[in-house]
Length: 167
Length: 287
Image (tube, rainbow over all chains, first blue to last red; front, side, top):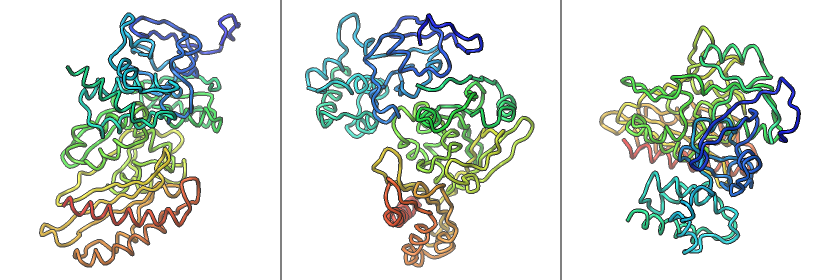
């Protein structure tokens, strides 16, 4: 959506204001714009991926008010007044989040395509349940799919991060 | 990318109903959007206007009122899986809600949206029928009560009129000794077969006083199966156990199973029989 395009006066736009990775963002969006497209194309944060586009794979997982949503199937205006976290916002001034460190240390990714979604989803899991059983972990992460790893290392990474974060 | 549409943001049920009535087929109710937006993305449907019902207050609470639980249509699956009133009185419903789709769908998807979209491969409708639930449908100046078993007319079709808004789901709390069980089978993202059973025993626990059975997902809409219930209702336990296989066969046929990606008709019918047996035994063990 080019900003230099002349907009017809009857095109509806919604001014939205939200926190993105801790910083205030103010944008005008049209009702039909998807959060995934706004974050990737208008805001330039391409860690979030379009993969299945039908909210079954989890590659588009973003955290809105700390909870996981499918950016591919969320209308952008829905984040008005809320906080949005992308993978780019997880590290604290260059210092990696324990989940990011654990995924590196334990080999929790290969191609890395599912990884931003995996890490954000597992952050939401550990924020809700800091000491999940493997069953609880698998249930929560059920909607995040990986083609490469066979999941074993992903589970190990998350469990390791949980241990580290609890101490 | 979605095609452009206008967003309407009414603040009351009356306003919602008025908008739906005014714009007819060119407008659609929008809540979580977990089904609607997918259909729009795939180009299967298009609406000039989406009516955002989430601006209406008071539709997202779970209330307990003596022997009844009232669930607001805008409650998300995530809310329902954590609702204390449901955990205490309807653990089978909590288990169902915990297992709807995935964590992201549960976060924004609403029970009202699920029921009104009436996608055949969905869970809640089947259990609501077995629980004898009712749906409250509202217009600008009136409401009516629709039983769950008459709500689901066909695939993607409910008994709601075009300008009616689902506001509440009303569920009678089962009276003990009772057992409620929903079991589903699926290996794709959506469930392929679902069976729900709710039963009451006498106080001596040697007779099934009442039973309600529903099957879903296999056919176009979830259905109550009174012919299977008759085989089990008002009978001593050993007779019920003898009739269970036949009840399964009756339920299987009543499911109106369709051969599709989820499986062949006879395969689904077989699964119905298995799930009926297992869910009955599970419900019995709760008594």
